[in-house]
Image (cartoon, rainbow, N blue to C red; front, side):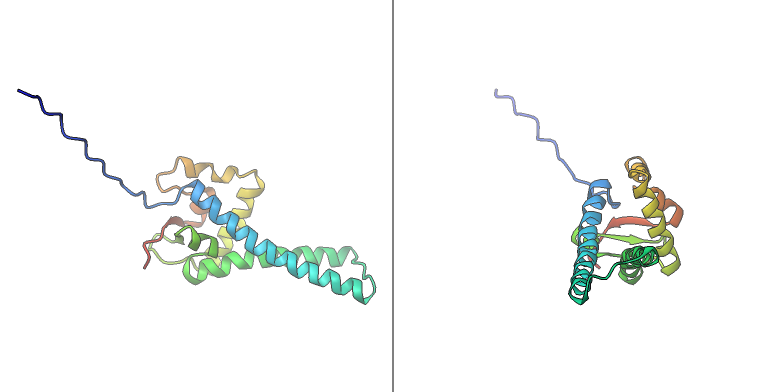
Length: 156
């Protein structure tokens, strides 16, 4: 009598609904290239115009204003997309979406809070992202304080 081999184990893949650190990092990198690349092009065009006009020198106040415009444009990029449909182009490429507990995109105030906190998470050498590795909903400090989650998009 020939012994039959035991049946192969059935492997079922369970998709975790919340986006992890790698998916979020790639999405953020895509967004960074888009927004900073766009701002770099605008700055280059303005610098070229300044050189053609006659070498305009920016004073301290003008440099501070330029930095504030850069900061507002960068923050505005994220706030606009998060508030609109919960996805930036980078998040859309990675098939993730930011939502509130009710499943809706964050409002303007929550998006502004989230982008400020995101900036703080980044300038602290990305320490604000460490909880993503341990939290059951994979939230960073900015998500916890803004009461948002980043989940895989179901395509709806």
